Image (cartoon, rainbow, N blue to C red; front, side, top):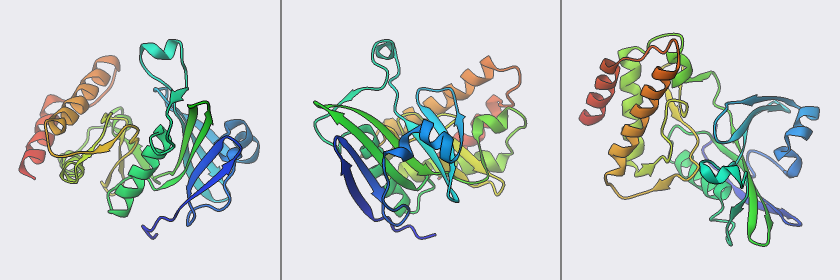
Length: 241
């Protein structure tokens, strides 16, 4: 598949859609509506985290749809409303454009399909649609039923280092946002609030966040086949790259 992405924008009243013309034609708001998709496609809700997400199988396309939800204390009062005077600074458009940049560079991320913003008086709701990466499991899912081999830990470390070498900051690098397939290939997903940055301490902070997520899952699950020695492999490989 080509890594070329052709950005286009369409508008319907207060709804704006940024999309890849080479991946989808004439998108409308139905593509971001789980109720509509439930009637016209195969759709499965996934995850229990901060965002609502669904696997979508429609017209031979396999996508992941994610609706942006707030986290933290403010989510008790404001569920999915954000403020921005610019479409480009909205959560979904920012992530779509970042994914476009990373994907066209050949980095292992999902191909962006479409991003939607519904605006009203500076406030907005947002969604993003990306291609599903086939035949993968999250790092957390795999560790729930088997150990990762040394080679897999090394591949994870090398992939993270590759992103860091390109200045890619991931705002929530955790065991659920790292995917592996049967060929031991590694992908990173969910670039909400991600950035391109100059080199700095954020790289070490990314790794600390991942390590913290592994420890948190291990402490909360009856079976999670992660050991401290695994982290030593990852850290050692990262440091050598």
